[in-house]
Image (cartoon, rainbow, N blue to C red; front, side, top):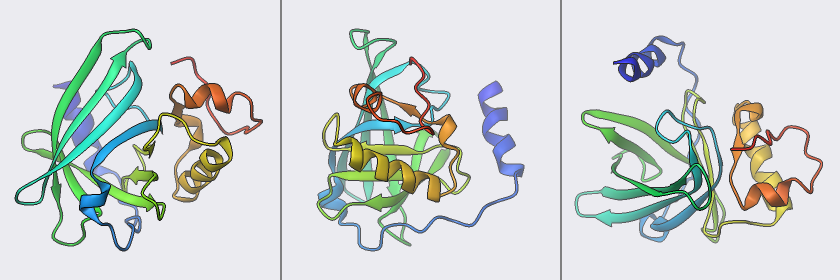
Length: 183
């Protein structure tokens, strides 16, 4: 019940203007595995370590999504959630991600590099964000640029958690805005 109240309480907040999505998302090319390098935790993944999103395009514009992670530590038990993304008729970069029926959370591909190697998924409310890459870690300079983009989108970077192994690489930098919590 508390989760339902949390979800509905966001509905009464003053809406922000939608974030622009990527212009020409090739949905087929976007499919596959994406390592979550940084995010704002959701009620469903507070103890997630080394999260991975896997997308598979199914008939009817449905994206079968598997969210997997280790619970608590890199050696913790493997957890997995199966979700469905419903691609909008408006744009392939806008999905309704069905966490549980009938709720579909906004999912917007707001950044994607030309080689489909790094991406940022956002929400108009700026409550959750995911910075992802095809590999578990990327060059810290590229990661820093992605975090600057997240900030430009209107997110509070102090709420961001950085996942291993990216966090180990970031500790070597002097970026003051990155929350280096021990999650």
